[in-house]
Length: 130
Image (cartoon, rainbow, N blue to C red; front, top):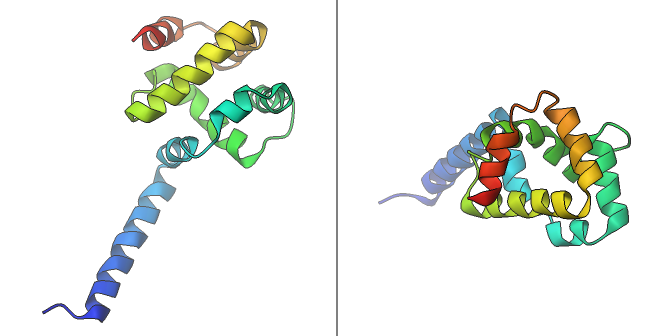
């Protein structure tokens, strides 16, 4: 029979291990946090979205959520969200499509900032049409 203290020790070890994995992989942790952000609220509020974009372009302060997403942008662009879950892929597609359709000038500036040589344009286009 397993004692309660033994279960607590095992739970503690598992929790510590999960925390260590998140700390060792900030991109994975940031991707998980992406699912907790109210993306529709951000995309639907021009002032908030502009603040995010200014953060991404190094032109303004970053909220913790914007800073997390900013760290992801290079990886998202180069891997076309290859490490994302289906839900995360859907969220990233929604964001990218909103930017392309509603803020094309900002989208171009983001591309120039994060992919100045255009290496990932085709990868992103394929991701968005998949």
